[in-house]
Amino acid sequence: MTLRDIKIGESAVIEKLNGKGALKRRIMDMGLTKGTEVYVRKVAPLGDPIELTVRGYELSVRKSDAELIEVR
Image (cartoon, rainbow, N blue to C red; front, side, top):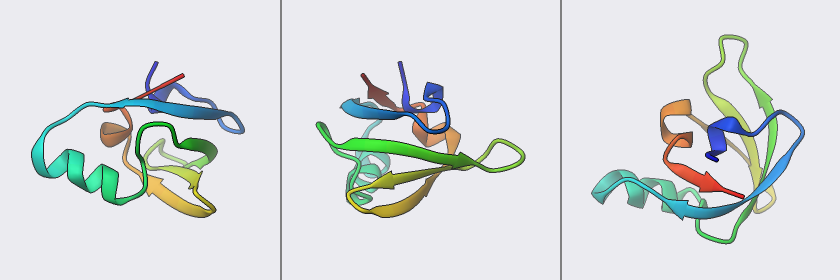
């Protein structure tokens, strides 16, 4: 299951980051690292981006990036 599959109002824990190089580094720099809990706050009206609460702050992530983040 990926972060993109999580419904509004649900939480998940990051298991694995897919992707390579600069893309993976950018995701990690946003605080999305293995073992981090994320809460899906809302989704934009057209479905992209997804707004998350991570480590006490709000973060918007594109669905294409959310597909690279495996969660449980």
